[in-house]
Image (cartoon, rainbow, N blue to C red; front, side, top):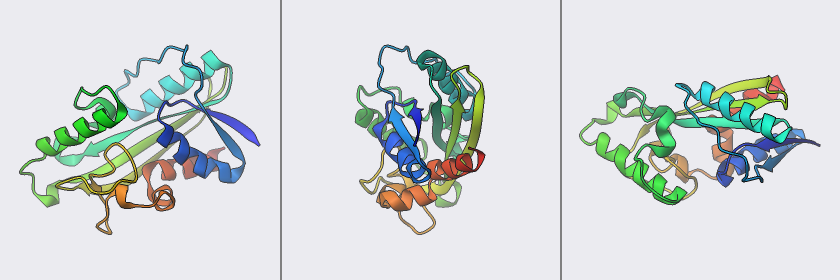
Length: 196
């Protein structure tokens, strides 16, 4: 079985990635070292930020690394929060506090926006970098829906409770298996598997 280090401190992302890549014989190893400075994700696109992370961690660790950059694009907000999704509200000490603040800000920003203009999507870009900093593969996936009026569901993280899908459920109301089969990360991972 091949090993791939996943450059994230988010255990939910590691679980989602491992669920797909484990099926093709790739063991996903979480980022265990905390002494490596987190690279400055100053890219203007998801692709640029995924590359920044993958290359920095691959070189620092001397192993092949998969990094992702993902977020939510809301059409009525000109694509915001976009690459700023994780820290959209700019507050919160823990992941749960940041998620709650981000969701609250998004709902405030969309107050009064009619249903038909609340279209949105999750975007995920995956980048695999080798220890020398060269790029082995990149893939992009989307997960389309619209922003609901209030959070629903408890399975997921981030904006999952707000993204309503074509079947009327939110991303946070899907089982893990359903989410992996349909999500932006799952779609990007399936593309990545073809490339690898």
